Image: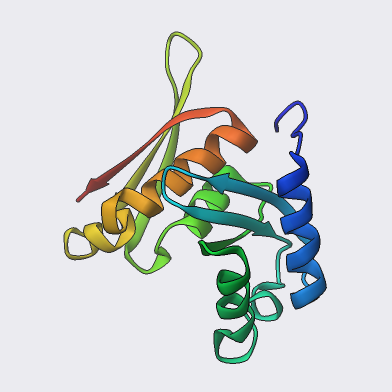
Length: 147
């Protein structure tokens, strides 16, 4: 687990806004300016509450913040958190490895037909998985490979 995550005033205000609109508990907020989005990490089991009926909460929030919004369900297990941040349908296995130098990497094995869906347009999903794995479990890299 990370030593301590510090939030900027902008992240705190986005977390408060999201919680007040959805009623879901937000554990973390990452403003990803590289991909022009905001990533919210929410408590396990609150995804339906966070999305809202027909996605109305996410749509309203995207209009309010002027960026795309991604949601990830939190987990204390690094494999599960990585799985939650990617397109789970095509993932067959996730392996964690520690290198000789002490750095950790995650290898995500996917079906060939779904590799592009797991990676996401422009690498969006892969970057999200990498950010969260680094932030929570000090995993330096996430490799996505096909069988």
